[in-house]
Image (cartoon, rainbow, N blue to C red; front, side):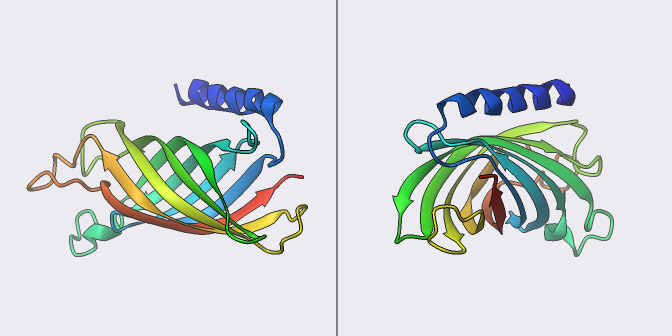
Length: 180
Protein backbone atom coordinates (compact mmCIF):
# COMPACT_ATOMS: atom_id res chain seq x y z
CA UNK A 1 0.00 0.00 0.00
CA UNK A 2 2.75 2.46 0.92
CA UNK A 3 4.62 1.65 -2.29
CA UNK A 4 1.53 2.51 -4.35
CA UNK A 5 1.02 5.73 -2.39
CA UNK A 6 4.68 6.69 -2.94
CA UNK A 7 4.37 6.06 -6.69
CA UNK A 8 1.18 8.16 -6.85
CA UNK A 9 2.83 11.05 -4.97
CA UNK A 10 5.91 10.98 -7.23
CA UNK A 11 3.74 10.87 -10.39
CA UNK A 12 1.64 13.75 -9.07
CA UNK A 13 4.77 15.81 -8.41
CA UNK A 14 6.15 15.03 -11.88
CA UNK A 15 2.86 15.96 -13.56
CA UNK A 16 2.74 19.20 -11.60
CA UNK A 17 6.14 20.11 -13.04
CA UNK A 18 4.48 20.55 -16.45
CA UNK A 19 2.91 23.76 -15.14
CA UNK A 20 6.01 24.89 -13.28
CA UNK A 21 7.00 28.51 -13.59
CA UNK A 22 10.03 29.49 -11.58
CA UNK A 23 10.61 27.54 -8.34
CA UNK A 24 12.14 24.11 -9.11
CA UNK A 25 12.03 20.78 -7.25
CA UNK A 26 13.39 20.96 -3.71
CA UNK A 27 14.49 18.47 -1.07
CA UNK A 28 14.71 19.29 2.60
CA UNK A 29 15.80 18.05 5.99
CA UNK A 30 14.54 19.33 9.31
CA UNK A 31 13.80 18.92 12.99
CA UNK A 32 10.37 19.28 14.54
CA UNK A 33 8.50 19.46 17.81
CA UNK A 34 4.96 18.20 17.23
CA UNK A 35 2.79 18.32 20.36
CA UNK A 36 5.98 18.04 22.46
CA UNK A 37 7.26 15.03 20.49
CA UNK A 38 10.70 15.37 18.87
CA UNK A 39 10.97 14.51 15.16
CA UNK A 40 13.46 14.30 12.30
CA UNK A 41 11.98 14.80 8.84
CA UNK A 42 12.83 14.74 5.13
CA UNK A 43 10.67 16.35 2.46
CA UNK A 44 10.24 16.71 -1.27
CA UNK A 45 8.64 19.80 -2.84
CA UNK A 46 7.30 19.94 -6.37
CA UNK A 47 8.09 22.78 -8.74
CA UNK A 48 5.74 25.71 -8.24
CA UNK A 49 2.71 26.17 -10.46
CA UNK A 50 -0.12 28.66 -10.95
CA UNK A 51 2.26 31.57 -11.49
CA UNK A 52 4.68 30.49 -8.74
CA UNK A 53 1.85 30.42 -6.16
CA UNK A 54 1.34 26.73 -5.23
CA UNK A 55 3.71 23.85 -4.42
CA UNK A 56 2.90 20.24 -3.50
CA UNK A 57 4.97 19.02 -0.55
CA UNK A 58 5.43 15.44 0.76
CA UNK A 59 7.19 14.77 4.05
CA UNK A 60 8.11 11.73 6.10
CA UNK A 61 9.31 11.90 9.70
CA UNK A 62 10.62 9.70 12.44
CA UNK A 63 9.07 10.91 15.69
CA UNK A 64 9.84 10.08 19.31
CA UNK A 65 7.44 10.23 22.27
CA UNK A 66 9.44 12.81 24.17
CA UNK A 67 6.20 14.23 25.62
CA UNK A 68 6.01 11.10 27.77
CA UNK A 69 9.62 11.07 28.96
CA UNK A 70 8.46 10.66 32.59
CA UNK A 71 6.70 7.38 31.70
CA UNK A 72 9.41 4.68 31.47
CA UNK A 73 7.11 2.25 29.61
CA UNK A 74 6.70 4.48 26.55
CA UNK A 75 9.36 7.21 26.89
CA UNK A 76 11.10 7.93 23.57
CA UNK A 77 9.10 5.26 21.74
CA UNK A 78 9.66 5.71 17.99
CA UNK A 79 6.87 6.12 15.41
CA UNK A 80 6.40 7.57 11.92
CA UNK A 81 4.35 10.40 10.47
CA UNK A 82 3.66 11.25 6.82
CA UNK A 83 2.32 14.50 5.38
CA UNK A 84 1.06 15.48 1.96
CA UNK A 85 0.00 19.07 1.50
CA UNK A 86 -0.17 22.16 -0.63
CA UNK A 87 1.94 25.22 0.19
CA UNK A 88 0.81 28.64 -1.04
CA UNK A 89 3.32 31.47 -1.29
CA UNK A 90 2.15 34.54 0.57
CA UNK A 91 4.75 36.81 -0.97
CA UNK A 92 8.23 38.04 -0.28
CA UNK A 93 9.49 40.15 2.62
CA UNK A 94 12.52 41.74 1.01
CA UNK A 95 14.66 40.02 -1.57
CA UNK A 96 15.57 36.86 0.34
CA UNK A 97 12.62 35.96 2.65
CA UNK A 98 9.58 34.10 1.35
CA UNK A 99 6.36 33.71 3.38
CA UNK A 100 4.01 30.76 2.88
CA UNK A 101 1.15 28.78 4.35
CA UNK A 102 0.65 25.04 4.06
CA UNK A 103 -2.33 22.73 4.60
CA UNK A 104 -2.73 19.01 4.06
CA UNK A 105 -3.32 15.48 5.25
CA UNK A 106 -1.45 13.74 8.04
CA UNK A 107 -0.92 9.99 8.51
CA UNK A 108 0.63 8.70 11.74
CA UNK A 109 1.83 5.12 12.24
CA UNK A 110 1.61 4.92 16.06
CA UNK A 111 3.70 2.64 18.25
CA UNK A 112 1.90 -0.45 19.53
CA UNK A 113 2.23 0.90 23.10
CA UNK A 114 -0.28 3.66 22.23
CA UNK A 115 -2.80 2.12 19.87
CA UNK A 116 -3.92 -1.04 18.12
CA UNK A 117 -4.43 1.02 14.93
CA UNK A 118 -1.78 0.51 12.27
CA UNK A 119 -2.40 4.05 10.95
CA UNK A 120 -4.25 7.12 12.20
CA UNK A 121 -5.27 10.04 9.96
CA UNK A 122 -5.55 13.76 10.54
CA UNK A 123 -4.85 17.19 9.06
CA UNK A 124 -2.25 19.89 9.60
CA UNK A 125 -1.78 23.55 8.84
CA UNK A 126 1.17 25.88 9.24
CA UNK A 127 2.76 29.19 8.36
CA UNK A 128 6.40 29.40 7.36
CA UNK A 129 9.29 31.71 6.60
CA UNK A 130 12.00 30.68 4.19
CA UNK A 131 15.29 32.56 4.41
CA UNK A 132 17.49 32.27 1.33
CA UNK A 133 21.24 32.50 1.85
CA UNK A 134 21.48 35.40 -0.59
CA UNK A 135 19.01 37.43 -2.65
CA UNK A 136 20.46 35.97 -5.89
CA UNK A 137 17.61 34.32 -7.84
CA UNK A 138 19.81 31.31 -8.56
CA UNK A 139 20.47 30.65 -4.88
CA UNK A 140 19.91 26.94 -4.17
CA UNK A 141 19.82 26.82 -0.34
CA UNK A 142 17.29 28.15 2.15
CA UNK A 143 16.67 27.88 5.88
CA UNK A 144 13.05 27.60 7.01
CA UNK A 145 11.03 28.12 10.19
CA UNK A 146 7.45 26.85 10.42
CA UNK A 147 4.75 26.99 13.10
CA UNK A 148 1.28 25.50 13.03
CA UNK A 149 -0.92 22.75 14.37
CA UNK A 150 -1.66 19.05 13.91
CA UNK A 151 -5.10 17.58 14.42
CA UNK A 152 -5.10 13.80 14.62
CA UNK A 153 -8.56 12.21 14.38
CA UNK A 154 -7.58 9.45 16.83
CA UNK A 155 -5.86 9.13 20.20
CA UNK A 156 -3.73 6.82 22.32
CA UNK A 157 -6.47 4.49 23.54
CA UNK A 158 -3.99 2.27 25.43
CA UNK A 159 -2.99 5.12 27.79
CA UNK A 160 -5.02 6.28 30.77
CA UNK A 161 -7.36 9.09 29.73
CA UNK A 162 -6.82 8.30 26.01
CA UNK A 163 -4.74 11.45 25.34
CA UNK A 164 -4.21 13.16 21.98
CA UNK A 165 -0.52 12.37 21.62
CA UNK A 166 0.06 14.11 18.26
CA UNK A 167 -2.55 16.88 18.16
CA UNK A 168 -1.44 20.38 19.04
CA UNK A 169 1.13 23.05 18.38
CA UNK A 170 3.99 22.17 16.02
CA UNK A 171 7.23 23.96 15.13
CA UNK A 172 9.76 22.89 12.51
CA UNK A 173 13.08 24.16 11.25
CA UNK A 174 15.49 22.96 8.62
CA UNK A 175 17.17 23.40 5.25
CA UNK A 176 15.90 23.11 1.67
CA UNK A 177 17.96 22.61 -1.45
CA UNK A 178 16.48 23.72 -4.78
CA UNK A 179 17.57 21.78 -7.88
CA UNK A 180 18.15 24.60 -10.38
